[in-house]
Length: 85
Image (cartoon, rainbow, N blue to C red; front, side, top):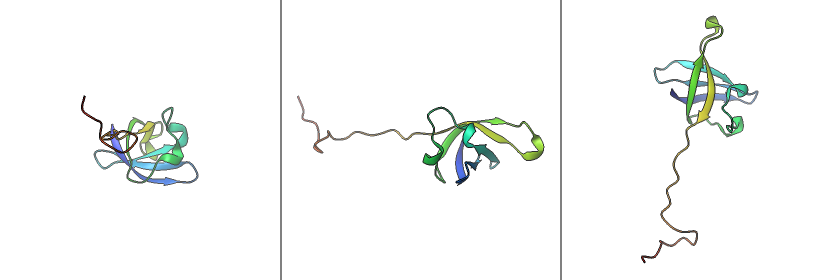
């Protein structure tokens, strides 16, 4: 599912607000391979799965991965538009 980073704490955990408004706890150990905790910011959109090992503590997010925005290329590295052939 997709959600938004609500908050992160420098001690290595945070909360994600899911699509229905439910908050999910996550720990840096719950991040997907290639995702760095230090790169997550409040408001970032993330994909994640749900895991509830102890329902009394609330839902936990697993395999958390930031949704990457596509990079649009409109010019070459010189800053000018590509020439027509």
